[in-house]
Amino acid sequence: MDIFDKCYRYTDAKKVMAAGIYPYFKVIQSAQDPEVIVDGRRMIMVGSNSYLGLTSHPRIREAAIRAVEQYGTGCAGSRFLNGTIDLHHEVEARLAKFKKKEAALLFAAGYQTNLGVISALVAKDDVVIIDRWNHASIIDGCRLAFGQTLKYRHNDMEALERILTSHPGKGKLIVVDGVFSMEGDIVNLPEIVQLARKYGARIMVDDAHATGVLGKEGRGTAQHFGLEEEVDIIMGTCSKALAAVGGFIASTHEVIHYLQHIARSMMFSASLPPSCVATIGAAVEVIEQEPERRAQLWKNAQRVREGFKEMGFDTGLSETPIIPVIIGDEQQAFLMGRALYEHGIFTNVSVRSAVPEGRALIRTSYMATHTDAHIDQVLQAFRIVGRELGVI
Image (tube, rainbow, N blue to C red):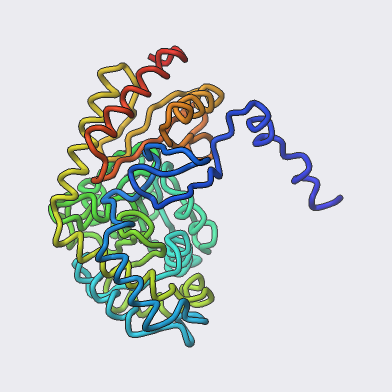
């Protein structure tokens, strides 16, 4: 049997392409701003995770340029060997302080962060417990771990407690998204903290979509609930509100020291380049100094969510700047994504395996830099397309 047979048999994407409604790998010809150029035409971007609109911030761009001028374009090796520069340590210290932890460690990608941390911490006799709606990187990190993986229904605390009760004496790590990336809802962290205390489990929160967004000062999910001292490990990505690429983990000195020497996805990957590291540090500074961006982000999100609901759209569990429109049927979701594209609105069509079967959706997400005029156009396009397709 030819190992490529599965490639020849795969036709799912080709069928969508043939129907003229394929929404993926669109080539953007401009910066990731509220308006982008795609196929030579200007569109409103509501599919970006640049929540605070920092990818074009002058101070952040200048920081990246200065880093290239001083350090060059890359580190030419792994952090473990020759790829650590003083800038890495400076930014890790800033991230640790921002997240109210003792230390932090940068990885080359958010995906690699979850893979490396979970697989390093969860040993043969341990269990890792996760929400079924967790991000793919968490699920794949669990697959790499030698311990047992146990899943509970989304935000179902009774199901979580049953799992915790049934594994006494084991090392237990609960890993959850702070903000769930498809539905835009927030984890029930207060109850998770209570259960973790009761049953001797540690907690790791993936703050990919919460950093810069949740909390009075944008420090994330734990600050949002006033539980910063109760969360053992905070993971974050740098490709969203932090305007770069990469990932980081923040915890105690001992945990970070262990991960530096055990987390394979960090040890055996090339180091995050200087321009990205400088961008991350500058973005944290802007988050701290420009809280009005976060205030505007939430104002924009609230207006869109209320607008969608008034039209009759199902926005699922959303309570953040991630606002889905639940369609259900995949074909209908593809059709709606294409129709919105024709109206100049760039969205994300999410189907299996990004969402549960039967819950296909149009994922929209908003920036602090969207104007009232942008939002007016988005709402108008959704109203027209929704009526045309019979969704509302």
